[in-house]
Amino acid sequence: MRILHTMLRTTDLDRSIDFYTEVLGMQLTRRQEYPDGEFTLAFLGFADDPDGPVIELTYNWGVDSYELGDGYGHVAIEVDDVYQACAAIRDRGGKILRDAGPMNAGTTIIAFIEDPDGYPIELIGAKSD
Image (cartoon, rainbow, N blue to C red):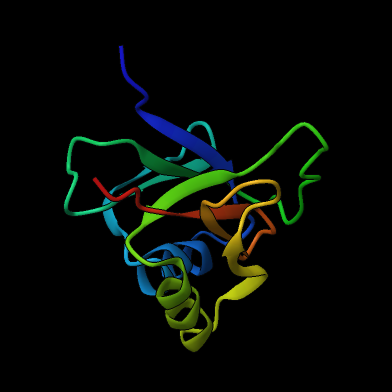
């Protein structure tokens, strides 16, 4: 077994695709309209791991807001250097929720950013071998 994707609902699919591709550097792998169900799906992943897990963005036609709920946590993405990633994300207009630094009660370097719909994304520094 393996994780295939994490699904997030979005209120503006193009805005979210732009964020995940332009700010985080992911690639849109496929986009499919479902007129009978009145929704569109877009899948985004990283080119260096084409068989790895992806983000599925779901746009339900005509829905312009969602409650994130208190049960949702975050999506985590490993990056080589959290400090550099935060600087690049900030330069590309991304919102930083927590600047890069050691995690509470630990030494792992992390940061939190936010996507256009308010979903938190944790950046975790790659472990050195």
